[in-house]
View (cartoon, rainbow, N blue to C red):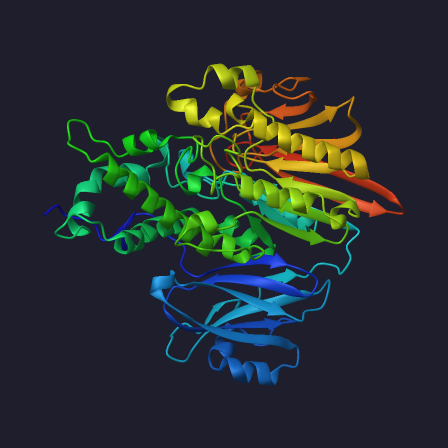
Length: 545
């Protein structure tokens, strides 16, 4: 029998996240707090309106209940039994909070855990609730976190991002896709999980098949889950990543690299061929079964580390067709919707290849609801830009290794019908209600901004697409600006793109300002760019109304 690696030892040479916290969906009165612990057991989450008076040493000698009883400013205490089979992760929900209030939080172990005050002992774990009816918002946007794509590995723009968020007192942050890369490039010196699967396929089939050749699907998914968890623990181990996550409320949506490069833009045959070995008698049916089990594992771990602290949606990890990854949320005068371009993406479907018809209909109902008509602005997160690359290039060079990259694009001719319906929905809604709509995107490893118009039918519409990518991935070379879309007519739609800004060759992130003050609305995007080690920070301001 072939030797199969213990999945707990995967990438054993890389430092990994142990205990960590993420502030998730936060309102004026509630918060979702995600925690990973280094050890199984009972752990307590304590929330306080003030720093606890004791230091780490003094707190370690007290039970969580005693700490709460001794401080009248402790507002919540909850516990959970953390388990290895759940990845040692859990998302707490705390309600009944006060608007615009700073809360400190602490993770405390039970008496049988040696290190009692695991998080918060330095009083640096805190967040702020939002105003009850905010008339202004400041929020960060980033995408494409891959610090291992450069040599030596580094955080890219994360330190600058942290400083800007803190200086501008950001309300929250949106991660626009590719928060990890499980299919890394050769420079990373990290195992590509799909290369690993190809090399170890035979050993997996030997261990997880019965005498009749049927696969133990549950056993394989459990194995693959441990591999995917490793990528999150490796990629999120960086200091400023952890600092941003534990301080500012996070909203996240995945893109392809949390699953497989080009997921959804590869045919069934192309996915099977990912596992095909030269001069081997491979079984395409088994290969495809393995690919789809990997997708189930990637989905489970995406839920554990990212989606669990987003606003809640319908989840069925046994039948992913019934799972909703897209979600909406509102803060005062402003509404947000994160589109899922991977969970139901299928290039072999006849229509709605990117979103799927069910998601498109759900988003349409949300977009055309009475609540949206009363908002001052709407922000749509589309991990892949609606417009970025020159569409003639995208539709003529969609071959070879870049085929899936271009077929991911809304501008690829196979997606034009779906994009036409999306643009018609957004422009019509914007025009009818005088509602600015801003699409926020990542994916492409450079930054851009476009105005999207339709002067005849929707002359009063205000629609923009702002792209910021990548915060730490090795950026596309400066010459990539040549391949970006110029101001032009929209292929497959009776409208126009107006190019406002493009930049390549730099790590970048965005800070969005939206204010409604004295009856006047202002919205703008600050696009920050810097060198590969975070130096030489510059910004470009783009008005979005």
